[in-house]
Image (cartoon, rainbow, N blue to C red; front, side, top):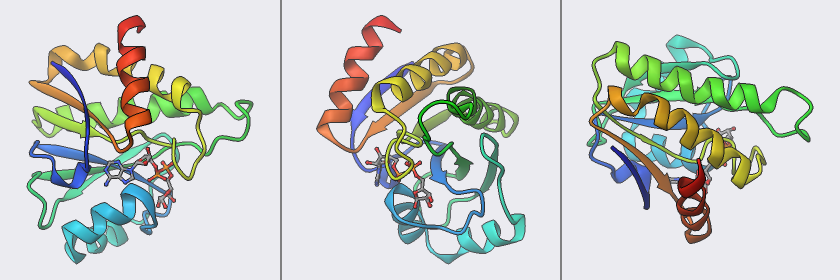
Length: 164
Ligand code: AR6
């Protein structure tokens, strides 16, 4: 089942939440900052041990104080006009999150809108990719949630869901 809702991903009760991280796994602002603040220092400790995550790849850590069991950290692409392979990299980021969740036996997963904040990926195009990949993996999960932080993003997700 695919679910689209507005909310704060740190509060989601699912097996695994996805973090829109950076390649250094160093933490930052946006959803990354919110997740590390809510989860506590055990997550950053594990991120430091892992060391990094190339763009389009994903890694998994504990979830500290969160209700989720695990966090999958992925580094989405920075949008630089669409000529730097951004769509393939964003698709790969979503795919690798799903693959890692499956490999770890996790059956419910929540995603933020990867790359659409600080990294500047246009929201409509990013949403289409997120929902396309989500549909491909729907049968492998009990629930796939797309968590929209803003009402504007929620509207885009709902609209694109009808045509993807
Ligand atoms: N729950 C759900 N979504 C959220 C939350 C939240 N608590 N907080 C923000 N968002 P961004 P990016 C939304 O900038 O573009 C960080 O510094 C936000 O409104 O967090 O992939 C990292 O360390 C937007 O829709 O991630 C990287 O350096 C979406 O999450 C860089 O930013 C993604 O926005 C990654 O940039």
